[in-house]
Image (cartoon, rainbow, N blue to C red):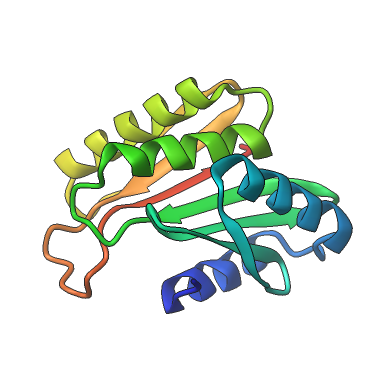
Length: 153
């Protein structure tokens, strides 16, 4: 299920990464990741693909030059359950094979913990050539919880 925030992030990513996405590679990477988590590819946007899964409100992959370059995940829960981090970790590991699912899940949780302590500021960490960025806004009343993005530096 896509959300307005995913579309806004996609437009932002488009401005940051100006070359066109490769449909074939991006589609196959998204489909592979969706299969690993038991999710479904629900829509293709200009530069990325939205994935639907019950434990992740917003999940998408942005591609450039035949490679996945950005994963975006968001939960509606202020404190996501363990299955959110497990699902996101499996998807990240499918898109970026340099990292294991356990490492990705653990780093996503660590990043969100840092973000929670820095309310409304982005927290960042790096592991195995990937940059995790997280944000949490305790005053956000639009029904969305933490935001996580993972990308190649």
